[in-house]
Image (cartoon, rainbow, N blue to C red; front, side, top):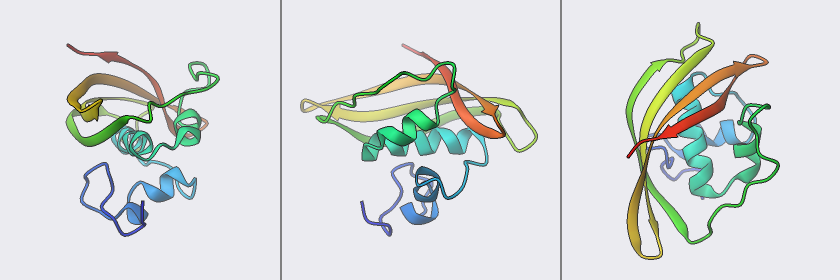
Amino acid sequence: MTQSQPCPCRRGEPFDECCGPVLAGQRSAPSAEALMRSRYTAFAVGDVDYLLRSWHSTRRPRDLDLDPDQRWLYLDIVRSERGGPFDDAGTVEFVAHYRADGVRGSLHEVSRFVREDGAWVYLDGVIEP
């Protein structure tokens, strides 16, 4: 992905001004929703290291294998609750759309985020039907 391409999270900014610096560790996500967007972007660009770093330490898997045939298409944020600069926890409901094996699909999840050592991290999520 080139730095000037639109960010996969669809906030409307170039990758290098949006999620790129967060994935690179140059800055932290300022909110739970920003972390959700950066994690979606990491799935879209295949950044396993960032996905693992942004997972809560008590829930983080040892490793993560991404399906190379799955292409993430776009992200819809349904709602966000809390997760701002003065919060310690937040919830983000989203629908992530993808294509795998020539078939389109979507993942609808309600994710929980918390602060760990001052930074937002992914705690867990419930997949919605």
